[in-house]
Length: 373
Image (cartoon, rainbow, N blue to C red; front, side, top):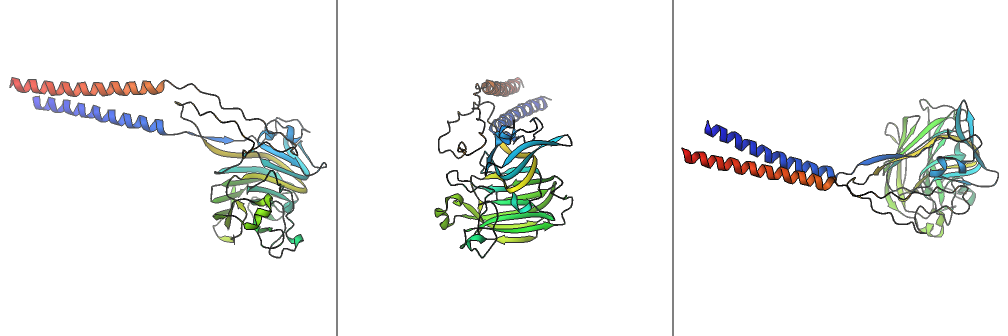
């Protein structure tokens, strides 16, 4: 009976020690795991008055820069069937204020009858000093290019709502012409696709890094697989498109079958943006959203103070031709260091002391009982 009691006490002490170690490791794991939060822009126009210019909208203008190609271009809030949207006419471009180096999702509800002249871009670049607007024609064929077609924009992957289907276009490099050309594939017979001139269709483009996923009305349309990062030598003399690119692009349909492969793509590999280009056409948009995951700081630590932006910052203030001034970003609020850290360690220390005392007590009692025998 004495041996049984002593054995039970030893097991109890061992269990206590095990639980202590487990608690210590678990607590450390929690402290070392960073939480993530999904950030999404507000792309609705319901809070704006009818007739409001895009530059003066409450939420949209915070995340998107709007620029007119000429004075005749317009972008104003309109209403139809008790729903509001942004109506664009003329030469106009919209591009994200933020630049990206990681995955994100760009989605928008769009209605247009101008197909190839209205593009929804991802993985695009924009040199503030030497612009290539998203509504601008690349003039490839017009400058005697023989290996492709002309189109809008200078870089990236663009989606176009055509009458009979959806076009996915990949900007590319050519040795002749303007050196900026296009390779595209028209997807037809798309389930759920509605006449784009009369109905809104939802475009969703997810950037997964080396894979772009394109969906129409929540159904997979195509993917683009990217590889082979590099530059093009002639671009040093053409600053508007002088970026680091993914050169190889493989376009596949929803079944995973390859439909286009090129090794001269102009798909920007770093510090890229999303955009919309309208070349002397009409476009209605609503629910234009960019969403991405952002790592949150450990709640027990105060966030590092963000340095003031410099003149060379990648997300610099738009130049004076912009028709909208991006809202200033509020500096992160400083948090007081949490007291929970030292409390946690105090609890652990107390538990460790209790376990040690228990073990010593069991050993002493065992020795005393052995002496009594």
